[in-house]
Length: 211
Image (cartoon, rainbow, N blue to C red; front, side):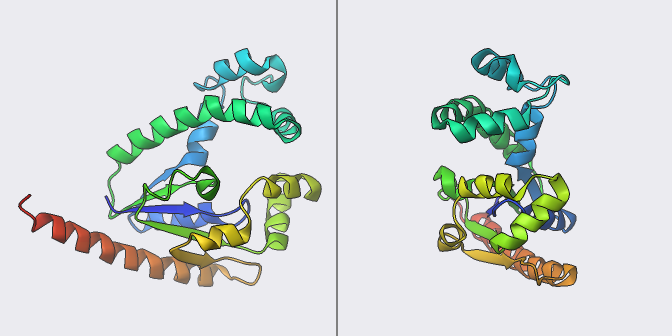
């Protein structure tokens, strides 16, 4: 399938864009959703995390205690590397499995850390960045999660900069503080139609190639 890597910083609105694309017929695989599944009660990553980090990072519900783990990885780069060594291979396997089973006019893989990982740019046909100014990111995340601006800023500092994301973008959907819902829909729709055309052209070339 024709593949789009969709990324953006926390609070940029990439999940909203992905939902729109899915409504219009794209297949969507969201690595953040997969990560939450793996760290939910009974998730495949819970027991390895418990064994490595101890019970303090597991909530009474049996899910990962995200605040406890966030505090740990922000104070210890080694802990971050250890967590990633546990969960990233699991995410990769599930992403590949779901991508292979996906059906749609093209495939969107939502990867919040696409730029940071350095692994995804060669796996997709185009990189699309949902772009947003930092102040709007902070306001959106605070409104939906209740996290303090200081915590949100720390999260953002661990992600690629706005400039680094835009530097690798083939396509950009602007979703800043001045963007209305209708404008976001229009921008996403324009790209959707372009990607559909690209996917159809590739399918036509493949069908016409006897080899």
